[in-house]
Length: 116
Image (cartoon, rainbow, N blue to C red):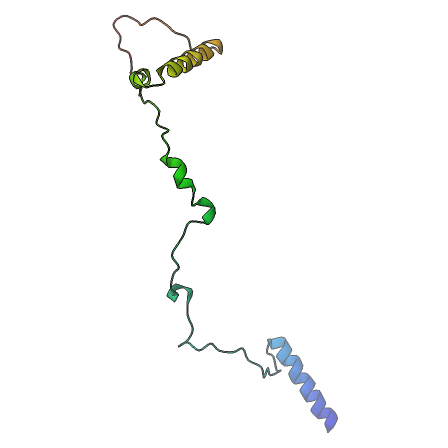
């Protein structure tokens, strides 16, 4: 009788394994969080964004006088006009030497396009 009983259990285990059922019981279960105290990330108080300390002193560098003339006239009227004239001459000579562009006469009956 025991052999019939064992064979029946073995047959039941094989059937369950074939059908994908797990006959073992797991007594330990995962803890279920209490939804009253569960806090989502979106519910948390947001911190105030702050600039990292390594960047805090850079705004002082912008307070210096680094204005450059925006036109030829402003460059000639500035207190460093002699330096601006020298720099402009060097730049034109460099462009001519490298053949970046060539100076050509203005064609008759045509307008010159200004640049900003």
